[in-house]
Amino acid sequence: MAKKQVGPRQGPGHGPGPGLIEKPKNFKGTSKKLVNEYLMKYRIKIIIVILFAIGSTIFTIVGPKILGNATTEIFNGLISKFSGGTGIDFSKIAKILIMLLGLYVISTLFALIQGFIMTHVAQKITYNLRNNLAIKINKLPMKYFDKKTNGEVLSVITNDIDTLSQNLNQSITQIITAICTIIGILVMMFSISIEMTIISLLILPLTAIVLNLIVKKSQKYFKDQQDYLGHVNGEVEEVFAGHIIVKAFNGEEKAVDEFSKMNNELYHSAWKSQFLSGLMFPIMNFIGNIGYVGVAILGGYLAVNGRITVGNIQSFIQYNKQFTHPINQIAQISAMLQSMIAAAERIFEFLEEKEEEQTIENSIDVSKIVGNVEFKNIEFKYDEDGKTIINNFTANVKKGQKIAIVGPTGAGKTTIVKLLMRFYDVNNGEILLDGYNIKDFDRRLFRKSFGMVLQDTWLFNGTIKENIKYGKPEATDAEVIEAAKAAHVHHFIKTLPNAYEMVLDEETSNISAGQKQLLTIARVILADPKILILDEATSSIDTRTEIQIQNAMDNLMENRTSFIIAHRLSTIKNADLILVMNHGDIVEQGSHEELLGKNGFYKELYNSQFDQNEED
Figure 1 (tube, rainbow, N blue to C red):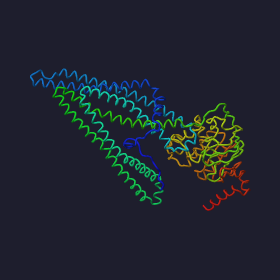
Figure 2 (cartoon, rainbow, N blue to C red):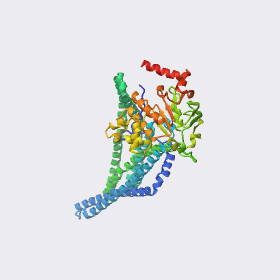
Figure 3 (cartoon, rainbow, N blue to C red):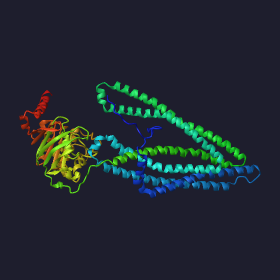
């Protein structure tokens, strides 16, 4: 069973381990673009955020020093009490504590204000980006989506936008706060004792060396964990997607064995990576405690010699404990920035993809289209270096004709329709509509002249009425009902709960495949286009309903140019012209009777289906 590769899960508890942070290809360029094109629009608010973040940090840093003064006052009061003095001055201590409380309140208010403003800025930027992506996705050519999976496109619109939003909101304020905290704590520590500060700083290189060793050791296991997690997810997705096949061929035991093997590999890599990463905190804590011991011994020595107060020792120990927090925070922020810029890079790459032109100057008026279509020496291939799909295709279709395009799989039938609709542009030759090159029309207005029913039905999450009205939103309820009757789906709709107001779920699993097809046919009937394209439009419909639909389609196609792609040749016997394609060329053309009389490729196709039906 082929394995579908699924990427590792991301998000809380499933992010990459140390050393596996995703890095952007052009950090500097993407950062500059993000700042200049998006952040600079809110520079006043960002400056306010920076000022409030600095203010909040300063007020927080001053706190331990003031608290140390209170401790010193209590210590001096106790010494004075034992020496026969006045004892502790509680009024002075109260003033100090009230001042301290006031500072913390102001610090909290500043933090709330800057958090509120930065959240607004981050959400506004992501709101604009989502709008830009929604506009962009409708302007991209079909060839872009041929090269990208649905998951890759959705990942940009959902995961990358969310990553940018969350990290943008946190990283700016956190990096300002962390830098201000480090500078502020160093200033306060040096103001208390230079010797004690030097001891505290000596601990940092030791911590960095130990952590670096752990990260290097655990990196391999984290990478293995992410790889095996992807394999496990892929195995689960594949087995559940093909659950019927697994059961039909008694493959349950094999599926369980394969899953157990992958799960076992995931287990071994996961516990090793988690164990090693779990060592970081206790080791850092141990090294930090060594530093505290050194600071306490030196502080006691300095206090005995009258060079430092007891309160200052307490303040210094608090600063010492706080000092590693902003350093760790900066390490986390650097990872966040890498992830954020990588996400922004993919978003910008998507937004910079080449668009198909939507409007042109001096466009032909589509309201005058009557439906004459001419293909002149068309050549086309999907990739510049790829195989040629259409070779020198030439055909002349008159207004109101019903044209059937037939041929084996891969002959180029659907490609012809895609070229006609300008989902792709021809490499050579031209397609004329009423004598005008279709490239001389506005693309959006041009496509309004076409109605299309595909083999793969598409309905969206909404009511049945909304789905039928998709091509003509201004249609009245009466027009919707008439279209449904013409498509022979009105009676079925009336039997449903809420009838036309029934909501189809996201997968449209609450109606059958044939019923979906009938609704898409009703949608085209309501749109009332000049030119019809039916690509295996009745493939999901039973024989009895197909006859009804054919009758409705005959009425609909009257006086309209119609292109019908069909595998079942019995459905296109009454076509005005049948184009028989093979390997991108028209090998035969004519009416059904004329082609049978030629005893050529068409007759072989027709007889092969007839013989197959007899065998069935």
